[in-house]
Length: 140
Image (tube, rainbow, N blue to C red; front, top):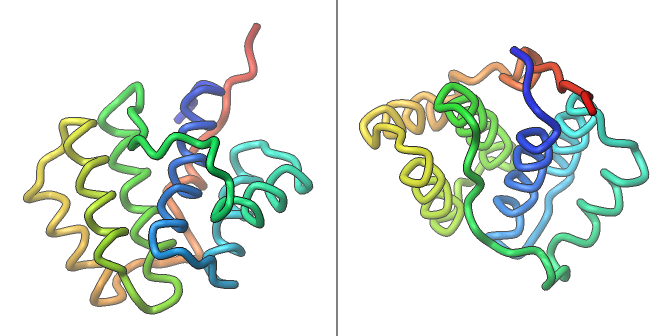
């Protein structure tokens, strides 16, 4: 699936916002977000700086991302659950924020609960994330 640079930016920024919800960035979260950022075309230095500074960066608005398609929003939610659970814990604030993403993108709350249950029972294959299916369109 091809996505725009704006959607790629929203995807990466959304994951950053997610991991700062519990006021800590774990090594597994940082590794997954860096991998996802690489797949989305972001340079290593940018990814590392963004991850390192997300907790203290007060200039990034905390609004849930809105994507250009429901399909992309669903992919984002699935990857977000994998990232959030990579440290073994889904913090209440992380879940609440993901529910706001679901609402903003007009996704089914019932679908989200099913995905949450799958993720919590470790049925997510982190070797293959949704982002692996994306290609960023770099058009002028």
